[in-house]
Image 1: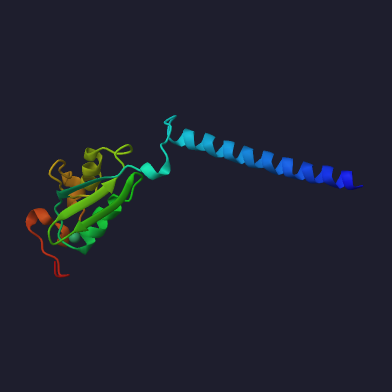
Image 2: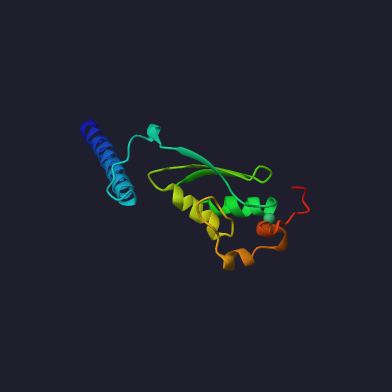
Length: 141
Ligand SMILES: [Cu+2]
Protein backbone atom coordinates (compact mmCIF):
# COMPACT_ATOMS: atom_id res chain seq x y z
CA UNK A 1 0.00 0.00 0.00
CA UNK A 2 2.78 2.38 0.92
CA UNK A 3 4.58 1.51 -2.27
CA UNK A 4 1.50 2.20 -4.34
CA UNK A 5 1.12 5.64 -2.77
CA UNK A 6 4.74 6.37 -3.45
CA UNK A 7 4.35 5.25 -7.04
CA UNK A 8 1.31 7.52 -7.52
CA UNK A 9 3.19 10.44 -6.04
CA UNK A 10 6.08 9.85 -8.37
CA UNK A 11 3.70 9.71 -11.31
CA UNK A 12 2.12 13.02 -10.38
CA UNK A 13 5.47 14.74 -9.99
CA UNK A 14 6.74 13.28 -13.26
CA UNK A 15 3.71 14.36 -15.25
CA UNK A 16 3.77 17.83 -13.71
CA UNK A 17 7.35 18.31 -14.73
CA UNK A 18 6.59 17.06 -18.26
CA UNK A 19 3.80 19.62 -18.54
CA UNK A 20 6.21 22.25 -17.32
CA UNK A 21 8.82 21.36 -19.93
CA UNK A 22 6.22 21.41 -22.67
CA UNK A 23 5.07 24.85 -21.61
CA UNK A 24 8.62 26.16 -21.71
CA UNK A 25 9.11 24.61 -25.16
CA UNK A 26 5.87 26.13 -26.49
CA UNK A 27 6.93 29.50 -25.15
CA UNK A 28 10.34 29.47 -26.80
CA UNK A 29 8.86 28.35 -30.12
CA UNK A 30 6.46 31.29 -29.97
CA UNK A 31 9.30 33.65 -29.09
CA UNK A 32 11.46 32.64 -32.01
CA UNK A 33 8.51 32.84 -34.39
CA UNK A 34 7.87 36.44 -33.37
CA UNK A 35 11.48 37.50 -33.71
CA UNK A 36 11.95 35.88 -37.13
CA UNK A 37 14.48 33.27 -36.06
CA UNK A 38 16.51 35.96 -34.39
CA UNK A 39 17.85 34.68 -31.09
CA UNK A 40 16.91 37.33 -28.56
CA UNK A 41 19.61 38.36 -26.09
CA UNK A 42 18.87 38.14 -22.36
CA UNK A 43 16.21 40.59 -21.22
CA UNK A 44 18.71 42.81 -19.42
CA UNK A 45 20.28 43.97 -22.69
CA UNK A 46 17.15 45.62 -24.13
CA UNK A 47 18.38 48.04 -26.75
CA UNK A 48 17.21 51.61 -26.54
CA UNK A 49 18.11 54.55 -28.70
CA UNK A 50 17.05 58.10 -28.00
CA UNK A 51 16.62 60.74 -30.68
CA UNK A 52 15.30 64.29 -30.66
CA UNK A 53 14.25 66.47 -33.55
CA UNK A 54 12.03 69.43 -34.34
CA UNK A 55 8.45 68.80 -35.40
CA UNK A 56 5.99 71.44 -36.50
CA UNK A 57 2.95 71.66 -34.27
CA UNK A 58 0.87 74.25 -32.47
CA UNK A 59 -1.18 72.86 -29.63
CA UNK A 60 -2.18 70.10 -27.25
CA UNK A 61 -4.10 68.39 -30.04
CA UNK A 62 -0.93 68.32 -32.11
CA UNK A 63 0.91 66.83 -29.16
CA UNK A 64 -1.69 64.08 -28.79
CA UNK A 65 -1.70 63.41 -32.52
CA UNK A 66 2.09 63.18 -32.77
CA UNK A 67 2.49 61.02 -29.67
CA UNK A 68 -0.36 58.74 -30.72
CA UNK A 69 1.23 58.30 -34.15
CA UNK A 70 4.28 56.92 -32.38
CA UNK A 71 2.35 54.54 -30.17
CA UNK A 72 3.76 51.66 -32.20
CA UNK A 73 5.72 48.48 -31.71
CA UNK A 74 9.37 49.26 -31.13
CA UNK A 75 8.72 52.69 -29.63
CA UNK A 76 9.19 52.85 -25.87
CA UNK A 77 8.45 56.50 -25.34
CA UNK A 78 7.51 59.55 -27.39
CA UNK A 79 7.24 62.99 -25.87
CA UNK A 80 6.41 66.13 -27.82
CA UNK A 81 6.93 69.53 -26.30
CA UNK A 82 4.71 72.07 -28.03
CA UNK A 83 6.58 75.10 -26.74
CA UNK A 84 10.03 74.06 -27.99
CA UNK A 85 8.57 71.93 -30.84
CA UNK A 86 10.98 69.24 -29.78
CA UNK A 87 10.08 65.58 -30.14
CA UNK A 88 12.01 63.00 -28.15
CA UNK A 89 11.64 59.35 -29.03
CA UNK A 90 13.10 56.33 -27.28
CA UNK A 91 12.93 53.27 -29.50
CA UNK A 92 14.39 49.87 -30.24
CA UNK A 93 16.85 50.28 -33.16
CA UNK A 94 16.47 46.59 -34.01
CA UNK A 95 12.78 47.12 -34.79
CA UNK A 96 12.74 50.59 -36.30
CA UNK A 97 14.92 52.90 -38.32
CA UNK A 98 15.07 56.59 -37.57
CA UNK A 99 13.46 57.49 -40.90
CA UNK A 100 10.43 55.34 -40.04
CA UNK A 101 9.83 57.50 -36.98
CA UNK A 102 9.92 60.62 -39.16
CA UNK A 103 7.49 58.93 -41.54
CA UNK A 104 5.02 58.07 -38.77
CA UNK A 105 4.96 61.71 -37.71
CA UNK A 106 4.57 63.01 -41.26
CA UNK A 107 1.79 60.49 -41.91
CA UNK A 108 -0.45 62.30 -39.42
CA UNK A 109 0.25 65.73 -40.92
CA UNK A 110 3.32 67.08 -39.17
CA UNK A 111 6.52 68.11 -40.96
CA UNK A 112 9.84 66.85 -39.64
CA UNK A 113 13.36 67.86 -40.76
CA UNK A 114 13.51 64.72 -42.91
CA UNK A 115 9.94 64.07 -44.06
CA UNK A 116 7.32 66.58 -45.15
CA UNK A 117 3.67 65.73 -44.56
CA UNK A 118 1.57 65.36 -47.69
CA UNK A 119 -0.73 68.27 -48.53
CA UNK A 120 -3.79 66.00 -48.40
CA UNK A 121 -3.11 64.94 -44.82
CA UNK A 122 -2.14 68.47 -43.84
CA UNK A 123 -5.39 69.93 -45.22
CA UNK A 124 -7.35 67.61 -42.95
CA UNK A 125 -5.85 69.09 -39.79
CA UNK A 126 -8.11 71.32 -37.69
CA UNK A 127 -7.67 75.07 -38.41
CA UNK A 128 -5.78 75.75 -35.20
CA UNK A 129 -3.21 73.07 -36.04
CA UNK A 130 -2.21 74.58 -39.42
CA UNK A 131 1.34 75.43 -38.47
CA UNK A 132 2.32 76.21 -42.07
CA UNK A 133 -0.03 79.18 -41.98
CA UNK A 134 1.33 80.22 -38.60
CA UNK A 135 -1.81 79.11 -36.74
CA UNK A 136 -2.03 79.77 -33.04
CA UNK A 137 -4.15 77.78 -30.66
CA UNK A 138 -6.33 79.10 -27.89
CA UNK A 139 -4.96 76.70 -25.32
CA UNK A 140 -2.07 79.04 -24.62
CA UNK A 141 0.75 77.42 -26.53
CU1 LIG B 1 -2.84 71.45 -32.96
